[in-house]
Image (cartoon, rainbow, N blue to C red; front, side, top):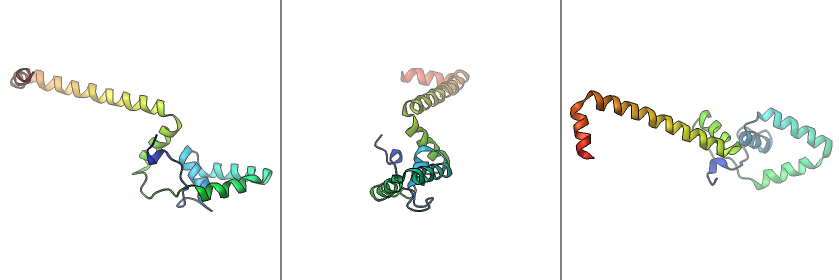
Length: 124
């Protein structure tokens, strides 16, 4: 997973302070409100999450502009980060379906056009 779309980034555009909670929300696909609420509960009960937030905010890169083309692409990459094997299976299944449909189209046109069928056989 060396793609820049699978890395964790701070999301300054959607963030409130340094963009760490918005980055976590983008990375996991969880709503940023729940991430922020969880952070606040942890921070006020323990104290150290403020320090961790600052360290993560300083050490991580900002999210590049135009990282995702649209919302669908963003959701796809979130699924890749959550379960790469499942996403690979889904992509393979999608390609198998496309291949099956193309074979049906080819079969239809070859069977209904004897001249085209003869030309294809001649090429084999």
